[in-house]
Image 1 (cartoon, one colour):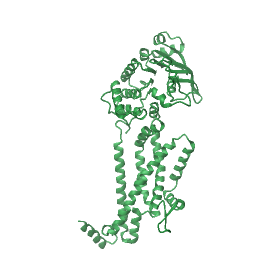
Image 2 (tube, chains in turn brown, purple):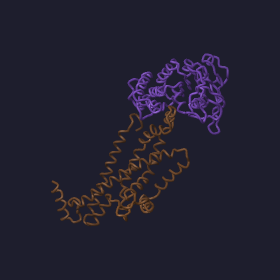
Image 3 (cartoon, chains in turn red, purple):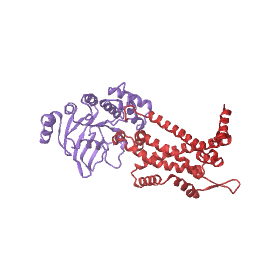
Image 4 (tube, each protein chain N blue to C red):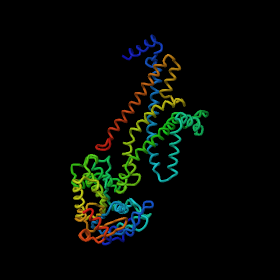
Length: 252
Length: 251
């Protein structure tokens, strides 16, 4: 079965040299694709998690009574929202990367930075998407009626408890559709990590078509299909979550 | 911190010469009143006369500019106030119910005892079920606020407040947002409470109800208490022209 599958693509490449699906019959290329896919998934999942955490914490800090804290959050949002994520990535890796300590290897002369290129990609993309998430959650928080929070205060809840038990659960539900959009964007933006040599899917695909120009169209096709699939999973998951968290008799 | 000097023969809530402004608008211009333990008082008056503001000052949802409010001898408007201790003693029910929409009726009632009083889940649930029964909503434990009528939501809100075992209950126009036919079920619930000896401070427009359950009526207008007295005297023998005018418009 698998034999005939790879045979089919080998023959296809023989007959139509522009359609060389090399990764379907050469295990080495297949492994490159799989490795790339793994990196893309790891990168996406890590950035989704961290950016949501940044969003939640940032939105909480935005409600702080301390003006300095509020201005810092606002400055962070303005910087990361108004500059290109690609430039941020290069800045983090090439500029900030210069100043992070390195670990000297056992041989005494190799130096490995404590934050790898994958680490920088995760940090940079999380902060980028996190800036949007702060604004998304803020909109959700503002949709929670003051009076509902007041009722909780009147019952003796602390400010943190009101945020955790009342505001966040309600704000999350309001924020989900916008959050969904931003996370979809984040997964797609992860391809930019290629610029700092993170071996994710785009990086691997470009490598393949540089080695085998005849595989360019098939590899591009694969890229599109992979992202449709990956983003599809994310959207499906978010949609399920939205359905599950719907409150009977509340809102739409 | 509980005040050891307070004894039940002193006013449970004592309001003295309270002034409160929103910006340049002074809404309370020196209001004083005392509420003894077990007493039910109703505050009535035209819209904008400061009734709601006054009772919101009692549990520190609003601050005041001058005067003093004590609950069981403890000053409310001071830097040293332990808000948690105050709010354990003072329950509040709002005009718009303000239930937590993402929690069922039962969870709404259980939440504060678990999170604030650190009670066990089992204990909180037992109390909550009893309270839901008390407000005549057994069978609705699993319903979300959005699935309940206004009157039912308001009764859950009363149960939620009672779950904290308060010493005094504040009712802020609790029937004002209700359909006429559901007003009664909420009033019956409050009446039960009053008859059990709960100290109640009500802001209300339900004159018949006020007359029936109140020990004392306060009439406020433009930030001052114009007149007060026991219901019979107040309704049948009002002295102040402003009270007379108000009563003639609504009775």
